[in-house]
Image (cartoon, rainbow, N blue to C red; front, side, top):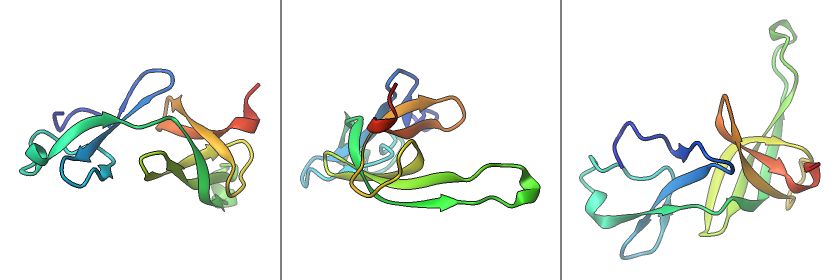
Length: 116
């Protein structure tokens, strides 16, 4: 993977590109780049897109910004790997969610309860 490659592929759902250490099996996100001196120790992998909320917080931007509150969450995906990002829908610890494509952030998490 080159250093200019994004950490996700613009697909629906997005493909989160990661690296798996050959000896330990540990997963690293984002992926180790091909230019890294450690790249020979890793294989490319793609993360699952469904997991559960580990923790979250609600951010309240300054009223002067005009921005509404939003949720940031840590989400555990199989692997195991824990990711951080915006969450839409129901915010609750243990809530099932999935990774979805987002125009601004590349990917966000969406509560499975929030699906139409």
